[in-house]
Every structure is written in C-alpha cells, then in structure tokens.
Length: 417
Image: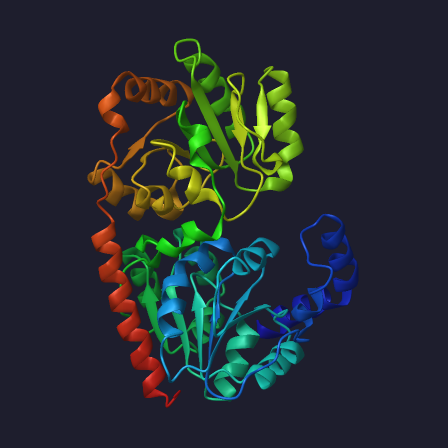
C-alpha cells in the first residue's frame, strides 16, 4: 500500500509546476513562498530547541495559539515552528505578535521533501493537529527518534471507514505516532479500533477562548449597533440562497434587520453576488470598508480570520454545511462568543459537540428553510433572547491547563530543553 501511496504522491510532484501555477492564478497560493512546499525554507533555524506544530488551516491554527503563547514564555523553548497548508492560515499567522514562532508551509509528503524538511528544522517534538496524518513524514520522523503527537485528534465516522479500508496499512501508520490526545470520545473509540495506545482525553482545544485574537484586527462594531443582526456562517453552496430567502421574509416585519453572510470559501463570492442581485438585495462587502447605510440588507464577509469578530455583534448564528451539504462545521467559535446557534440535520462530523451544546441550550436544530425562519422569528420577537450568557469560558481554561501539562511533560521527557 505504501508503494501505491508514494506513486500517487510522486505523480503530484511531477505535475506540481502546473498545479502551483494554477493555484497562484486562482489566488490560492503565495507566489513568493510556494517553494516552501518543496522543503526550501524561507526562514532560518535558530540555535537551540525547536518545537514543531502542524495545523492544516485557519481553525487548527487558532486552536493552538493559546498554547504557543504559553510555550513562548518557557526558557527551554528556543523556537517554535508552525506549518500549515493554506494561504489563509499563513496570512492569519502574520496578524499575531509572536516572539519565538516562525511559519512555513507544510512540504509535499514526498520522501525526499520530508527528509529535507526534517534535516533542516530538526524538531525536538512534532505535534500534528486534528487529523493531519502523513505517512512519509511520520516514517522519517520515526527514523530520527523524534516523538510525534496527534494533538486535538479528530477522526469522523466517515474518515474512520476510509482508514479501515486500508487494513494493516492504516494501523502501521497510526502506530508511528507516540501519543494521541483526542478531542472527543468518538475519536478515542476509533483510535482504539485502529489498535493504538497512549490515548489520553484532554478535551477539545477549540473550547479555549483566544482572548488576544480581538486585538489583531481593527474592527468598528459601532456601525452595526443600530441593526438587528443574525449571521450565516461557514455557508456552502445552496445555503446562501436559503438564508437570503429567510432574511427577505423576516425583513417584512423587521425593517432594521441585517444578515451577515460568512461563506466558508470566499472564492465563491461571485456566485453569491449573483444570488444577491437576483433577489434585489442591497449588499456590502466587508473588504470595501464602507459605512453601513439604512438600505444595506446583507453584509458579506469576504476575508479570512475575522469570523469571531462578527459573532460578537450577532446574537444568532446559523452554521452552514448542515442543510444542503453534509458533515457540518465546528460551532465552538460562535458558542465561545455566547451566540445562540442554529444548525441543520447534517452535522455528523461534529455530532458530539452539537449534542453537548444542545443540552446546554446553546445550539438548536432546524430541519429546513421554514424551521430556520420560525426559530429566528421567535428569537427576534423576544428581546430576552438577545442576552448572552457565557458557559464555555471555565471549560476552556480547564482544557488549556490539561493540554499544557501534557505537552510540557512530553517536551521535558524527551530532553527537549
């Protein structure tokens, strides 16, 4: 199986020039830094102990920011390397005022590139976030006796079935990882079925409130103060249309209503604008940085990394990829902002989190466009629903403490100081 995997990876490497050019043209790749994906570093490795975190994109990066900030205070950590795979996460990284931390793009999981990457950076410990499992990288870290941790590990039912189809190959790959800290009980059960050991439940890092996040963006919340607001976040194709139709019906009664749409992928902006024009909606793009006027119906957030700022001005949030698509999106960010969350029936990837939030009366299930309209109408009719009540801050602090203790213990155990 590893030979098949390497054949496919090498095929990607062969076609990589065309792939990179295409991604640069579609603004999905950094034209000045794409070579990092071929293990050509654009930053220097400092003398001393380096701890490495790999977070694939924005959500995973934000989940480890509080941990990075704490580790930067430690004398035994000389440098922290953070890698990711997306342009949006690289842009977000620059917004934080890190002192010891460097960002690079994760290299293609080719045997040559991964060896070159490890030999240059020489990490003392490697932390992979969420579901980042890369066979060649893990194999080459193992050869150098570098401990590997799957932090905030997540395996959905769908991905577990895929791993099971690979039989002994998947078990061999997972057994190259030294420690597993699953973010939920479901992941822990799946890991046991993959015959891994050293599993410890420390809680979901995404429960942790990143308080420093608010200071990295200039944000004028006053321009939203005269509006009744609800937000449609992480929307996928088909869901913007549903939310616009719900908005249009609600606005017949609530003339000062504003809908904030935060699409999951901003490269779909032109398609969304066509829908807005079709429905004759007066809309505004966040990137335009203009003042909202009385005629504005819809506010489109066409930037990355600022989502939680809009949660703070919106009491109600509909989480996408739950009606027209399947799998759901993580609702913890709006939950931390004390929003009332509405979601559709298709949230299998985050069912455990949604069940927890539903029991806490933070999240509420809707079946379709009609039930979303009725739920929002009920909230808007009752001014008491505008009051926010933070239930997650204490949980987040406990999870942060547990993870820091476990992480520091591993670093010190392997003489990374």
